[in-house]
Length: 149
Figure (cartoon, rainbow, N blue to C red):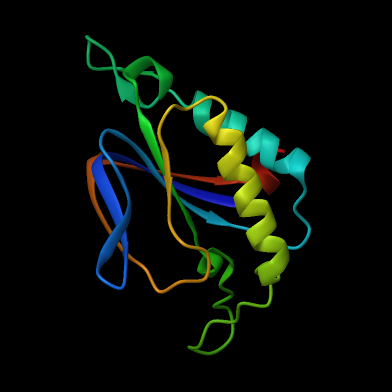
C-alpha cells in the first residue's frame, strides 16, 4: 500500500466538471493498493497518516497532527502509484491491485478514517478525475507499507 500525502491549504476533485469532494486545511492523499495488502496493513497506514505531525506549531516547527489543527482529508484512489517504469517508456501497472479488491480496500480506508477525522472527502474509484490543490509548504510525504509495516 502506498500513500502520497500532500499537506494542503485546500484541495478538490472533480468528475465530469462537477466537484465531488473538497477540503480546506488538511491532507490530500493519493492511495495505491496492491493485491498483497490487508486490512491490518491498512490499519497501520491509517494510524501513521492520522498521527503525522507535519503542521507547524506556534514556533514554526512541524509538530502538530491533523487533529491538532482540525484538519480534513481528501482521499483519492490512484492505481498509477504502482507503475513499473523499469522497462521501456510505457509504464506497466501489473503490480496495482485488481479493481474489485482495490476498491474494497479503498472503501475500508475511507470508513476507518471517518472514525477519527470529522471531515473526509473522496474521489470516485475508477473515474477520470481532475484534482486541484494548493500544496502548503510544499510538503509531500510518501508512505509505503513495505517500509512502515
